[in-house]
Length: 445
Picture (spheres, rainbow, N blue to C red):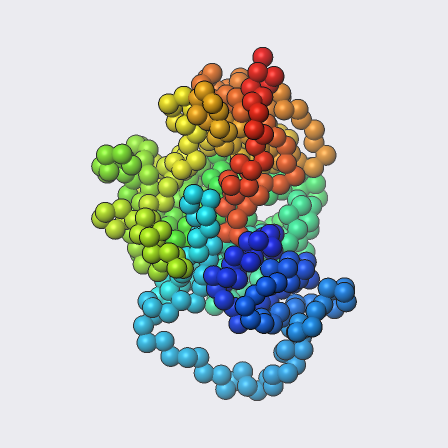
């Protein structure tokens, strides 16, 4: 069960209770949080420390095992004698547990069967082909589906893998050049920051041939500008922990999250009438295929709620497709803001705010309002050394969207947006930061 290095001790504790590990691997920067999460555990769980020489002695506790010592304790020859266990039913055995979408503020953990894992590895053959010379760098945590399966795909194909914890544009540029990276997996935010960085021309990125966008969609105009700046193909991958890899933008069509992946069936439906929709019509994306989860750990009711009456997985994402079969993410249906009886797509406001040159990341959520139910509120992350006022962000939205879609809930600046262990935005943590008293009058009058 891979986890995110940025996960809080409470998140780690919840995961430990779910997967009941026989051992926990920790790197230096996560060791203290791992020890905190293990406090009160019903049994002793050994912690295997990576790069223990980089860990201050005061952080190492009795029972910790250095990974290097573990390797030295096992004779090299035994690797040739190792025989993997025989798994009679590939669809029953669970090799992976991944953090899922969750619901109602509660985390869920999706079980991935052996059979589905093999199908996913084969699907990642498209973004990461078998051709020699692939040097792959990931800026995504192993806790997300694309992060872990792209890594496993590279190991299977014999590719070179580079991992990078630093998300600063200069660090990313230096790593891309130093390691002659050919394929880079990242969310749109860091990719855009690298493409817009003033130092980009100073770096030699001639080996870079493809950037795989995982997570949020990149608007078409931003896609074109970024692709031109980096002189590469931007190939979006659309993955869901519960359903696997559903779409891949192999032809780098601007604004699209791609075409359907092998072994997957997709349709767009009206979530109210349940009728199938035609090309150009927006509805909820639903899927069927051989990469769906086995179930949520210990929660069959939540597992059943993921599927409609005909057995189609409900992604909760509003999409449309064109006549060529390319899909486009229009809105997060579950993130619509219900304001005065109208549904306001949070993504529409986010796309407008992202046009501000100083904005690195943004999330818009519904803030409780006694009169209208919810009003839009923006949480904004600015680029380093950039300053902007709350009124400036509010005015930007006011200039581009109608009166019914204004930031009446206000704006708050953050150093980073909180995310779950799978890389999804943590709306629950953002809602906890919302002020209780209304600030609508002071912001817009």
